[in-house]
Image 1 (cartoon, rainbow, N blue to C red):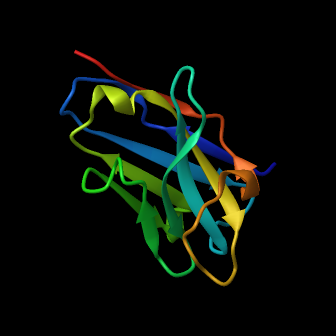
Image 2: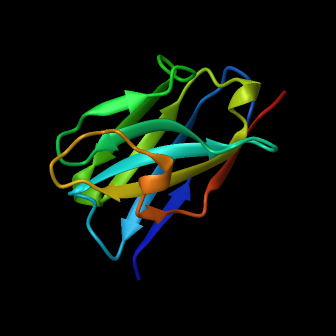
Length: 126
């Protein structure tokens, strides 16, 4: 069964940190771009960050640049999202998704992703 499973969400105070993980099973991520998306209550899902498992390139939404870092471990078939200096507006369900991209490239488009995880909730509140 092909699936992505997110973990690492939780409740954190403003200014705190969390590290999310996205583990793939049933397929290898080597030829995929893997992205993190989030959806806050009453809002549309938005892209947060994306990385190419092929060439290691990355990109970030302006709202998280300098605070979030995406990384990958091809041997563990896992992608991470380190989130620092969290703000209440970061509260959302965070999803990881994978798009088959054998030539590399880290542009993750919401409508083009092939696989999605079920999400993990991040709540930033005092």
